[in-house]
Image (cartoon, one colour):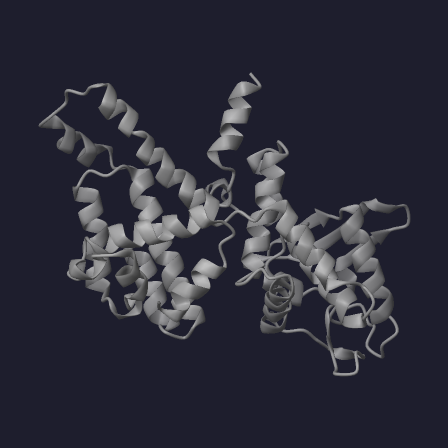
Length: 339
């Protein structure tokens, strides 16, 4: 098995998600010049996806569209291919330039109704077995959404494993909660300054984080009680260092003897905090963006409006926020049952 595909599968939390990855990668490979390598699940997982050319990926997308596949099916296949290549990028098997070019070639489709109509024109009569077979399209959509979802129990297990006795534990806990309970990007966490942490005397209710996001856009993100306590505990340690000006970095490096330093943590440092926290709790492949997805999904599951979630995430367009929606079909069924 390719090392980066192994990392991808290890990052998933259910066997169903892993099966969906293999199934959709096989469907993708069958539509390239390397279809012979799609003979089995094993050969698909061993295939060197990073060696395919931009033309190969373009042909894959074109084939899916011209076959009249539904937009949800096409996007599921392409999403899994993109995520596979993202892990190839993390593993240094592909350059960032090549990855970005391929991403543009296999971007999602908005609709494929025109080609679906062409395919259906030759045989538009259906029976009950055909209608029942359409559940396959739903299964693909559900599998795609399940890939990004982190269970609450998993997140809680990671938080518990971080602990709170060491200085590094207090820092790492605060960083983790900034992502899972406030939805901050890793660069936003790394760029936080002391002046950005706004504690209210009355506790968490009126406290917030002043975040400078993409495009130099500012947003205020309220603190949960748990996040408030974690940030307060870490802030007390920071204020004992020699660098406590308003513009001093909030999250700091910590040396081998657990001493909090004056210098700030880098983007890579934040990434490693999350990765190592996941490894300690046996959650392989955990990364910052998964926690941001978790934050958005939990808000949506709790009935928050997508526009509110977009504001908290710092999205200018709610269509971007909708891609963070990892609620599965069971949640939609529950919504209908509550009518």
